[in-house]
Length: 275
Ligand code: SAM
Image (cartoon, rainbow, N blue to C red; front, side):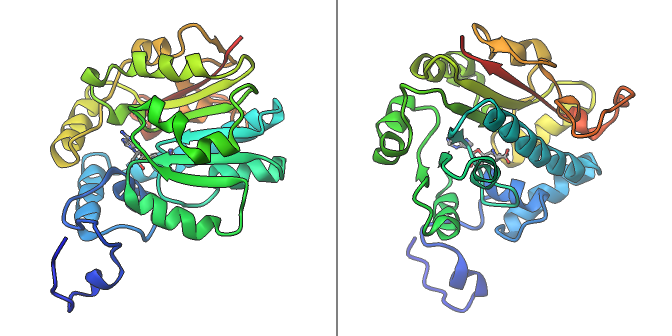
């Protein structure tokens, strides 16, 4: 902080304590989705991603469509409380809107380590007592579960929807994603579901994508389908298992396999139940 320029229009609306010159994952994703909560540094990364893979914007939209389908599926299984880890900046069809459309009593806690998610999330959630947003690092489950908002809104004795949507690929291998996921799964009640999506390694295109992410954002690991499937170890995967995002319970049947270069193959997803 401490910058006192005052004349730069960006300074007027950039939340305090945010360095707009350093791109953030949440803001780059917002830029990919065509949102407005991003800065030039973020748009530069989004442009670079699009230059490597021109249709990747389509895949970001497909990812949000998946989120709505999966949250509706969980609500249909009777899930009425959600812990949305790495929730991102508010955009269209956020978890609480989809969940509350199915069940107005549904509760959602959003968790993200980007401070802008908190300020924008609070603005969106004013007056909604069933929903909260907290700033925390998903790599610290003890901290997440100890937060007053989580304790107040989420009953760990009852089934919940544990969401790790587009976030685990921003953790490094040294963060031990599989071990971390298990620490969350160990805490949730039988009948709970894990909904996870993840960048999928499918060379050669993802090699270059991974380089762009790591160089410009410092995170973004494309892992193999086998690695992603292993994140569901000990849980019962619901049909159709771990698949490319458009193939997960599509609203309209998809009759032919995705082309090898289809951008929607960049992310794989699955939903699994804890017995
Ligand atoms: N889940 C949303 C969706 O799928 O539309 C947003 C996905 S966005 C690609 C990934 C989000 O994870 C970003 O908002 C980023 O700030 C957040 N994130 C990355 N690493 C995190 C960490 N260690 N703790 C908490 N949030 C994190």
